[in-house]
Amino acid sequence: MENLKIVIGIPAYNEEKNIGSIIVQLKKITKHVFVCDDGSHDSTSEIAEGLGAIVVRHKRNKGYGAAIKTIFSKGREMKADVLVTFDSDGQHRAIDIKKVIKPIIAKQADMVIGSRFLNNETKIPKYREIGMKTITKVTNITGGTKVADSQSGFRAYNKKILENIHLTESGMGISTEILIKIQKAGYKIIEVPIKVLYEGETSTHNPISHGSSVIISTLKFVAIERPLSFYGIPGMILFCVGLSFGIWEIQIFLEQNVVVTNIALVAGIGIILGVVLLITATILHSIVSIVREK
Image (cartoon, rainbow, N blue to C red; front, side):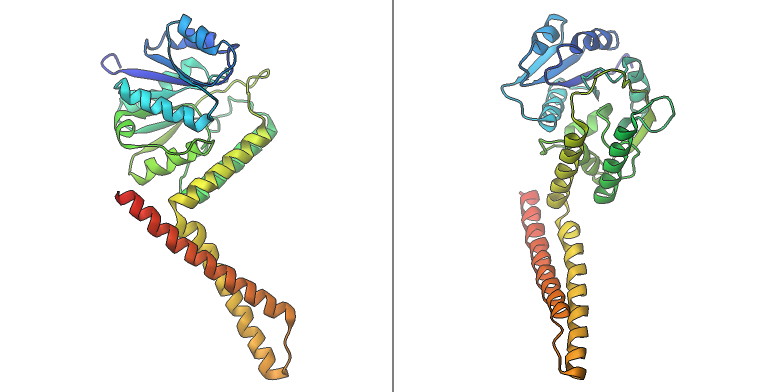
């Protein structure tokens, strides 16, 4: 650990109440601490700079994903051997950092997620637990990942990931984008248990809007990243359903000389929507392939 450059990046937006104590704790672990101030209107930047942290400011609030992209960029610029992302809302414990970076130092993993669901230490409010597990299921299904806590902001990455994984998402879907791209590139992801503090009003995110934003951003990213699966599978299902109803309607017409409007309608809508989605999947797949080649 002494020979490795450990860099800790903190995404922050109006976190003047928490940022000071967090930086003081993190400075005991490494001197390389920086804050991405995502357009704060309070004293977040001033407090961070006063405590010796490097501060990168966004002129306006761009979103969590944009902050994480800046942290990745800054981590590369600082030539970090290990980059840790650590939330600024006071929920994470600095003492868990050694646990999170240990597998990377031991070369057992390329990315480590600090998971809230691998032990019984964290008492998570039930509504948050249900929401986070739902989002994780959506992420695992759409992204093909197998993690217990897809939305944890407490993560560690090695140098290979910093150098080879480049991010595009500016919204809350960044967490999913990272997981999908890292898995697709063949890097190893593991999770370690951490304790999260939910006492008091530490979170700055409304759970409903946060969850909705994550799911929408995740689906948007998957739609671009995997258009054949995202559009093609539903398109094929609709086409087959429409075709089945169409054959059924033809049989009824031949036997009874009667057109059943509802069956014909389902057949027409299913076939049309199926074809549209299949064409969309093919076009988007071609466009994405060309863009990637360039």
